[in-house]
Length: 133
Image (cartoon, rainbow, N blue to C red; front, side, top):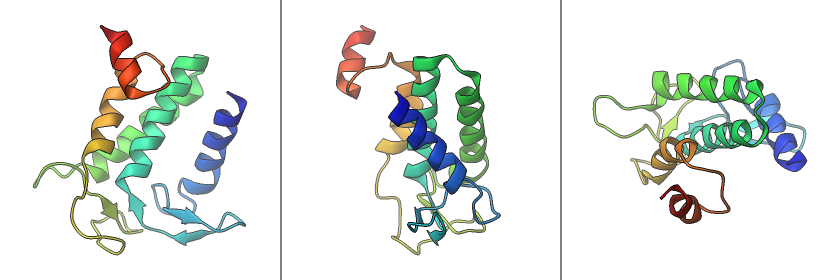
C-alpha cells in the first residue's frame, strides 16, 4: 500500500500540470522534468483507476478528489463526442494530436477506467468480475 501511495503521489506531483497546462505529461526525465509533453488517454485512464482503487483501499477523500479531477479532465478533453471513443493523444495545448501515434488504437483503457471503480479490489480484472457475481 505504501508503494502504491508513493507512486500515485509522485505521478500527481511531477506529472500533473507540470508544464503549466492541465493534464498528465507522457514522460519525465530523471529530474522529473517533462520530456514528452503530450497527454495520452491511457495515462488518464490508469490514473483514474488508481485513484478509485486507493479510495476503496484507504477510504481517504484525497484520492476521491483526484479521481474527480481526472474524470473532469477526461470529460472536458479526452472524450471524443464527435467521432466516438476517446482522443488517444492530446498535445500540450490539450487539443487532439498524433505526434506519438495516429488514430485510436485501443478502447480497453477507457473501458477499464469506467469498469474498475465499480468492482471490488482484486488481483486482476477477471478475478474482480468473478467476485462481483
